[in-house]
Amino acid sequence: MKRPSWDEYFMTMTDCVGSRATCDKNGSGCVIVSDNRVIATGYTGSLSGLPHCDEVGHDIKLGQCQRTVHAEHNAITQALKFGISLNGATMYCKVKPCVACAKMANSLGVKRVVTE
Image 1 (cartoon, rainbow, N blue to C red):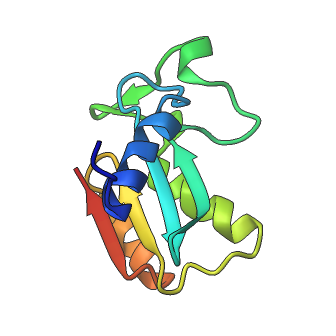
Image 2 (cartoon, rainbow, N blue to C red):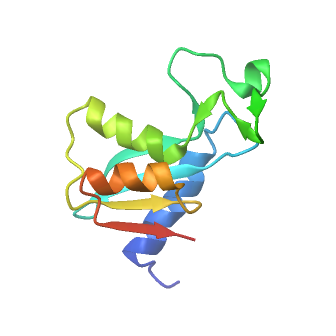
């Protein structure tokens, strides 16, 4: 069995993290890594303390579920909440990040984004 590259290894983790998503319309996972060490993870879901789609249903407006935030947003805010710098980090995403999440990652120093 061939040993996976670091990119393959961390991309595999996005599946596991994404399995925690609480919105089946947009379920995804994100893993942020620095020096080949996981520093934050996030999945598509409601803000902490608010009801989840899988509990109370979707809140769809303009084709988007308003109840949830993206996996990338959750991973970034998780790092910030605990004072973890994203400067020079790599962000592994199940899907290509939206413009807002990409801008947020870039402004906080994420140097590389890897997607499937």
